[in-house]
Image (cartoon, rainbow, N blue to C red; front, side, top):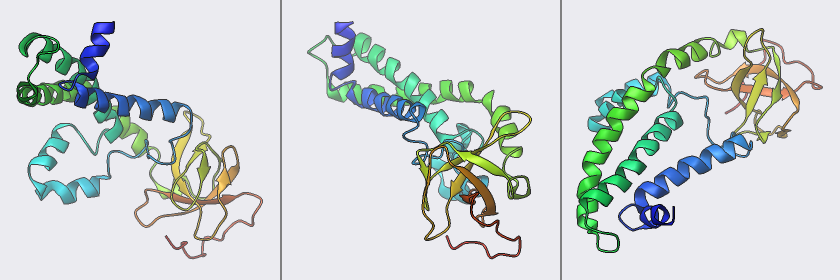
Length: 225
């Protein structure tokens, strides 16, 4: 175990270790409920419109499509990628880059290219079966008419003008939506009940308010974003 830690923290493997550490840190904070309102885990790696708009961006857009971004959440793709990059970096440098304490950073950089290629291939294989699952989740939760007028519970640390999530009970799995309060409204604390009364122009988020406030009429203007 000591040797593995030394290898992981060596300069040749440090980039992969930091990458994995960031991903693990994200999931830890998400599980503790401390990060849900800073990273929209429920959003599918950018909406389809954004992915389509980037279609002409060249190499990086093709990589995104290869890894099913837009169909699978970005954080899920990055998590699988980190899980493959790290062990391949450790093994590649251990077997192909000298001995502990006498490894070449140039060779480590050279090994990084096949590492990334192999990791992307493995990540694609891992996330491909998840596309249908996330498509079903998205199709059941993104239509404004199924959300507006319903009451839910704040499940993020808070809901303010920039961040937040609301859980709405259904006959099946709970519906998690990205929630915001309108401009100038006080934030809502975790556990508070709130009413979804309007959708953002792109339909990706919903404006909510505490249910002890008067219900907003359907003719009310959409809040300023």
